[in-house]
Length: 178
Image (cartoon, helix red, strand yellow):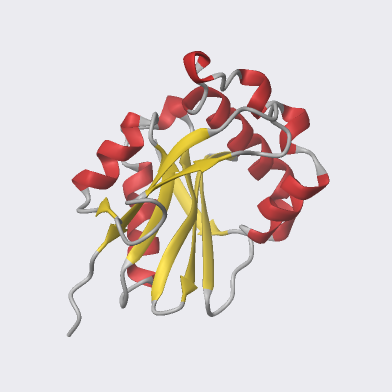
């Protein structure tokens, strides 16, 4: 399996949207919380606001980098990281479920880690996504109790039912300050 990683481009928006929609639908649904597949449907991912946000994740400049992973011509992963104050924030990190555990995420992570050679790395994620939480912990991230309410907050997408909120957590990789 040959993986190719390249910088993202705005013209990747259609395939990027599809990658994220499929990934969210398989990784983030949780019926007991009310997060059904409909919460992450193609319609939700194709709203104007969501498309604007996703397009911003494909921008590359001196303070933001985005890479995409491909197997042959199929997009199977992505990572976006941006400079935020004296730190860096991961605003998107995805590998499709069928390609997880094959080192693709690690290759993408290495790109983001190299770009963020100075400063802590921040990320927020759904608490119920145990697999991602475990991965970040393995890589040295800890709950960032300086953000939110002791490291936690609730997310609500405008397309979701009004009373639906998903518990999320802030995590931080503390880099040594030389």
